[in-house]
View 1 (cartoon, one colour):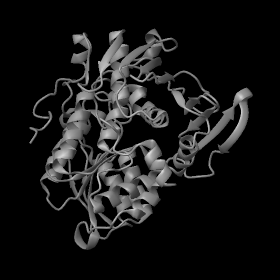
View 2 (spheres, rainbow, N blue to C red; view 1 turned 180 degrees about the vertical axis):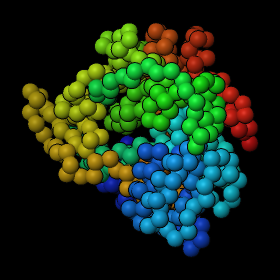
View 3 (spheres, rainbow, N blue to C red; view 1 turned 90 degrees about the vertical axis):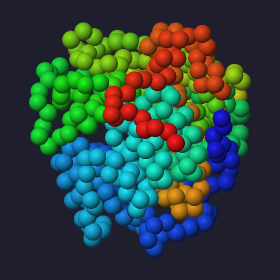
Length: 439
């Protein structure tokens, strides 16, 4: 279970994702090479992806907009007006999009609990997918998407944009050349001041919202504004807390820098509520601080930490990475910068913030759409790459919830001698919104 493209192979053959995309053969897609897109989830990230496609002037056409909230479709429709003459069709049912054979690509920008059901249905209907991070809500979903994409020859891209950033390429070239020696430990952090929301009672859902469909595979409960738009991330039924929201970006970069292409074999986690306690915690279902250590079979170690009560970062970055080598170390941030240090903290090469594209959004989309045209499944954040990085989210969360030091079999993808942890690799789905029958 290796990455389809290793860090060394990718970074020594390209200086940016655009270079990779330009080298691919441009096969026709859609009418006159046009790619027909459908956007499922018209909130903040969905709207952002639409703007990225528009600004990059790709030969693409939005055929459908899908959301359970009509007002969000209205807002996105206004942005499309200047991009294409024919307005897209509108629906609250993703099944309408899956059934449309003219759709080439489905963009999934829903809450996490809807990612896998939509992704698997779209892949099996012959569509390529761009899915927001994390690709999976629970661990087992990732393997299902990997196998479905392989079986149906579909292209998958997870929204891990830093995989395509020029900053990542520049930092990776130095790491591959051995500037800090052999990298044995990588660290990822996500330290921000999140705050909490006051607990409020349930109310009637808005008339313009299909709330039952928003809940989808999650358990039935009353409508609550704290669990709806933008706020759902802190509840286990819909999201993965900070480790799966912002932290997945930093975990993905830590795994990339460490150069590991398998799951860890041992996971330990601890944390809790050290600042937002009692009434101040609200109804958040994740801790305000957590630390996870992932040990790999060859002795390499990946460390993750988040703190959600600090108005400051580490080494100047709220989200970042440290790669520790035998000759020196590198501080890297998805904010668009890196710094190399040697013995005695002697500074080496650096990339100051803002001198290059920060997060690689445009390059990531170029990489994906060119892969769609060329039928090359090896995107910069393919299903396999996404599964290995999302696996860190899920394994870390399971270790925290079981309060144990867990041994994991990377090949069989199961915990050793811990039935409680293995049960958390998957979940129950509410019908009729569960995973589609796999073909």
